[in-house]
Image 1 (cartoon, rainbow, N blue to C red):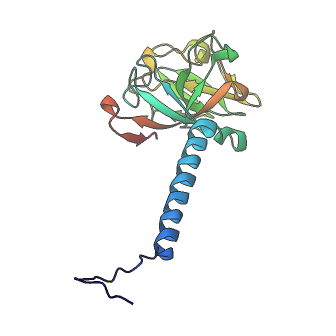
Image 2 (cartoon, rainbow, N blue to C red):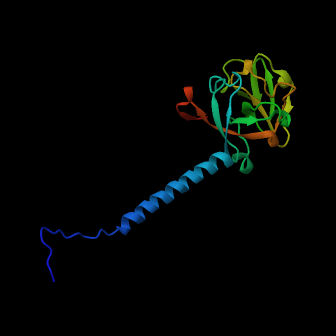
Length: 193
C-alpha cells in the first residue's frame, strides 16, 4: 500500500447537535403558537373601531382608534362606568356609538338642575360640566331587564340615551366593551377606564 505524500489533515465528520435542533424547533413551535393565539384573540374576541365625534372627550377623541372586547358581555353584564360600543336600536347602517354606562337594569334615574341622579344619588364623576339638556331623563326613568342608560363624558356635546332616537340601550345591541385606546398618532396603547 502506498502512502500519500504531502501533508494530510484528518477531517472530522461534523455531527448535528440534537440538543440545539430540539431547542430551535421548540422556539419555532412556541412562536407559531403565540402568533396563532394573537390572531385568534384579535379576530374572534377583539375588534378595532374609531371614535366618531367629541362626545367622549377628554377620555377619547374624535378619530381615535379603540380596541374592544366582544366576548366579555357574553359572560357578564356591563357595569356602571364601563365604556361600551353599541349600535343604536340595532341599526346596522349607523356608525358605532361609544358612550359610558351610567345606569344598569333596575336602576331609577333622572336629571335635575344639570345633575344626574341614579337611585337617588348624584352621579357627577364622569362629566365635564353640568348637564344642560336632560332630554328623556327630565322625567324619572326605570330601566327594564337588559336595558342600560349611557351618556358621553362630554355630556353637552353628546347624542346618547337622553335622545329619543337612541333611548335606553338593550344588551343585545351592545357590540362590546372599549378595552384599549391608541395614543396620539397610533404610537401606544392605553387601557380605557
